[in-house]
Length: 109
Length: 161
Image (cartoon, rainbow over all chains, first blue to last red; front, top):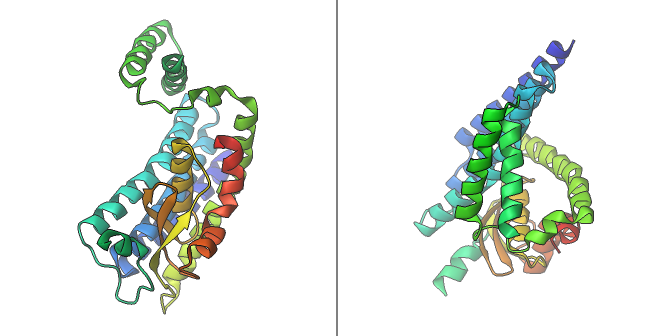
């Protein structure tokens, strides 16, 4: 029974990863792509790891999966933040239909 | 004391990572945690004593379900935008203001903002955070802060405030 639930959760996770990848292809510029990639892939990986915990139960392997989840939740947004900041500092333009860019105003001051 | 807190945390993480326990890994972990504490003790969070406050930990536990709710909402939101044929996005970088004072509180806030619907923190400067917003509703500092920051701030103020 646990196996079936676990595989369903892993399936949901893979589905979220798939949407993240589609977003990566469809979005127009670096920042929007980062948005899709960070959010969907983080939750997707979390679901996969929760599925692993459900299948193997609370033994050493399950605990390791939970710790990996915490690490991913901490590091993935930090990485996205660093990439976005680096992209903006090196002069990557926003999409042409973007509404406003307060960060550029600050840099040009 | 600061180093001891770091030692304690890294030792617990080591123990969780090397389960099942035996004497060798415990001794090795003791030395690894000791080296980590000696090398990085200075870089550890400034208000380390707050890690021992039970009420702050309680509010952090309250914060986790709130955060999970917004994380799932964020994914459904991105999913809708990605799969919609017209790609309904309206992006821009806005500036918001936070009331949080401590550095660790601000970084947790930034990470939460990145993982929640349509927002990605780009840079932080003092009490202002620059945020890339997928669907800009208002470029005014106060209105944007109300929409993005407030929902987390009231919990994080209790944890880090």
